[in-house]
Image 1 (cartoon, one colour):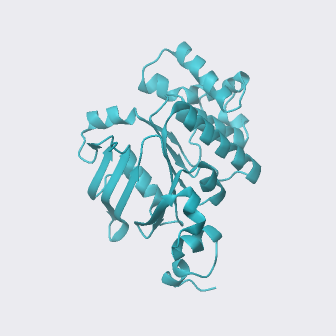
Image 2 (image 1 turned 90 degrees about the vertical axis):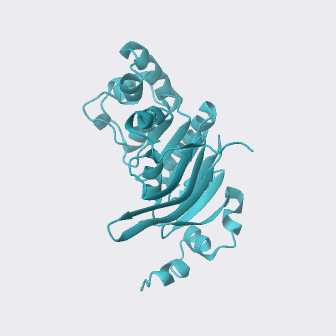
Length: 258
């Protein structure tokens, strides 16, 4: 069998007395687009940060290409980070840098590439997400929200990473621009042959970009399956979440009252 690109087994994480992850089991195969859905505060972002190593799991196993990452030292972790690209929820662009410098940041700082060469690649990546070369000489504050999101996507793919993480990629966008971003994500990920892991509560986004979907609830993966089965999951928690219903096991368990 092929070694999974990402494999999480029994991953737990607590902050003080609050248990956020209660034993996450998740497998993402090479070239696959996995989308994690779930409500706010269920552990989506913490799961992503544990895989990235931004947060250290309390226990459990996290393997990338079959290699255990939870016990890596700083040098090993730095080398591993070269496999990753990231689109942050808020864009996280550097205001003091021009757009092309933002896109080229990983090339210049991570790969020590010459600025001229990095700029050429950055401009090409901007074109790939539908922005002109002239956009590269602007500053992030001069761009609309949708354009900033495209720049963030260009930065995420600039180093041709093996794995790309998308943190709520369509948050704050109108429905049309959100769909544009979803299309760009699908096309860009396929073009570079990356494995994608996305967290979102946007069901339109999940349907468009996912090969596989996993739902997290109260720090555990309660359902995983192909996106084609999402609306026929047989799981009452999934059914309530994807249809946005006020009544169901999620709200009942949380003792929500209208």
